Length: 337
Ligand code: PMV
Image (tube, rainbow, N blue to C red; front, side, top):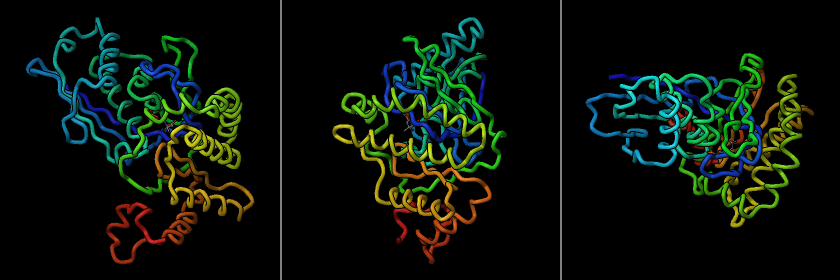
């Protein structure tokens, strides 16, 4: 019998991945860049048991049994086992039980699949003792998962090959490069999103002209500027590029037919608030970015966190009576504005 456990945190993209050129291998149409959160608050935890006594393979997600036959799970498992061929003939022959948990809302546009598949693939790699590149395997589970294999600032290179071998993640700089950086997550709504990123992205590839313009003409140049601003710790420019990229991603979502609408009125008030706040100082001190959901991820330097949070609590007043719920994070949508 063998048991392994791994933990993987979510990553928050500042240059978004949206659109695949190969649906099965999950090959993207543009490079993307994110920071992997350096925390145990938003992460996936996966334990795998392999035993000669197990009669069948099993998979539990957040305490609920799920099918083991899911295509993405199977693709990851097959690839790890292929690379492990000669390593552990015993363990390879045993059935496995996978138990995965997220300590934050799943499929609510909070990068749960990124943490989930990065964690699953890391645990499988540990189980079968495979070493070396595994970000390309995590990519087979969920594109953005390849970036959560590494810590710090991570770029997913779209790659050129049709087999996907060069579509891998690479660390740009470790998190220690910019230790003052913080991420605040403002939970607007923690329900499951209407349009999954898979279906939304496919519709965008099929119908949005803006998406192609973005991937060809905008992302390559913006990526270089973004990496320079991170290397130089130039928060003002970093924030500008991050917000522009989030806005352009949501513009391509609206350019999709029928449109993918992920941000709601509260999301837009948060972005308005960030711009008003930045204007007060004549420089950017906060940057918002929104994934495929209404929740806001804010990049901010440690020195500004306290002041900005007091502004958030002023604009979205926490309920006075139920302090407990407030402390455990009441979605902003449900607060009186
Ligand atoms: O990895 P997926 O299929 O969940 O796609 C995620 C895409 C975004 O989160 C919207 C952007 C990104 O780069 O993470």
